Amino acid sequence: MLYQRSSQLFAEAEKVIPGGVNSPVRAFKSVGGTPIFVKEAKGAYLYDEDGNRLIDYINSWGPMILGHAYEPVVNAVIEKAKKGTSFGMPTQLETEIAALAVSMVPNIDKIRFVNSGTEACMSAIRLARGYTGRDKIIKFAGCYHGHSDSFLIQAGSGAVTFGSPNSPGVTQGTAKDTLLATYNDLQNVKDLFEANKDQIAAIIIEPVAGNMGCIPPAEGFLQGLREICDANSSLLIFDEVMTGFRLAKGGAQELFDIKADIVAFGKVIGGGLPVGAFAARNEIMNYLAPVGPVYQAGTLSGNPLAMAAGLEMLKALNNDTDVFKRLEEKTAYLEKGIREKLTEAGLAYTINRRCSMISVHFDANPVTDFKTASNGDNDTFKKFFHGLLKEGIYIAPSAYETWFITDALSYEDLDFTINAIGKVAKDL
Ligand SMILES: *Cc1c(COP(=O)(O)O)cnc(C)c1O
Image 1: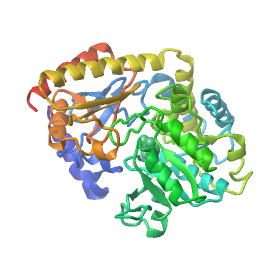
Image 2 (image 1 turned 120 degrees about the horizontal axis):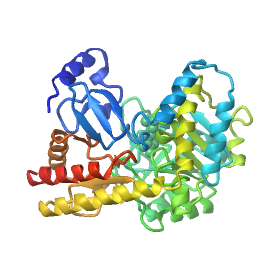
Image 3 (image 1 turned 90 degrees about the vertical axis):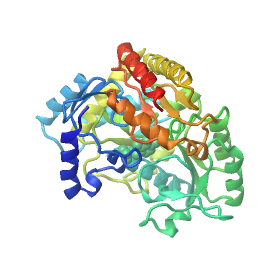
Image 4 (image 1 turned 135 degrees about the vertical axis):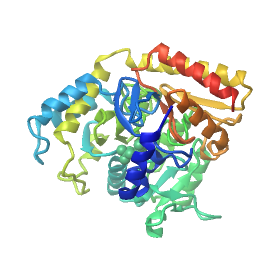
């Protein structure tokens, strides 16, 4: 495959956009080489600027769960656009999508729409802090909740229990209110609560982690967090930006039968347009302006094009009683195929999967948290990534990402992928 035109376009982009991209992971820094410029996409396939066809296992990092250019979404956006693209005033459409989301997700009464997952998580912790009157939050190392300051925190050094900034520009003042815990380690969370009595507003967690590869919660882990929060009058925030409307109609709350106090959404909920949302029971949501004291706003929040896209996406997922089952079956089929090929090739690997989230780690030991996820052999991953690319298969350009399976994939596509993996694995 040739990437001549993509390389040229990247060189031009680098002159006027930092690193040539509007979000860092797109730059291929961790796998090397030049990013591929997309021209168009349909169903399970991307078509790049050099005329290559790629089977897509990222799907815009999740939103295109029913495939690219999904017709009901595309048509709804076109029809809406003709009637005006933004008003900064209420529309009936916002109530329609809110009512549908509230009906699909357990344990929420009200939902507020924003423009990204970052905004959703940022607003969720502000609301939790306002509601509880406490400042500190617990996040788990390796979980991603967008790029707002409170989340760009790494484990502090030595004995300190609070984090330190992991990006310049994030202040120590902000970092001291974010406590870092280890995913799947309840004792660690208990210790943090012990050391910060009556100061912790909330725990925020990806209920199935997807930003350090796919890491499912250990048996009893989420339940344990629920109990710790209840015992300490802290809130449990599920960041379902990735898992919402993907693991099940009602997301992780439904799948694991655990109630969260606040839920953040993004990705699928916008059907491919810039949408995020956060939701909770009345008593918490009524703490938000204009009803309550916690401020949160957005000029383009609830934008008609975005709401039209999101509504069609949610309707499709709500009306298709088999879609989550189909997604799971396809992903399980893929998992089985990849296992066979990697075993045949004699490679050390771990595959993690929950529903339609899956990741391949080049390390034989269990991958259960950020530390174990970091043990993967990145050189092997790089070769794996570029080998698959040559075969016309696009996986995330980083070993720390989950693959997002789309219902648009046929079993033919999956077989093609499995065979390609067999071919690539022999040379690893
Ligand atoms: C993608 C993601 C975010 C951030 O969403 P953006 O729309 O990129 O701002 C937050 N949390 C999780 C779990 C995500 O996967």
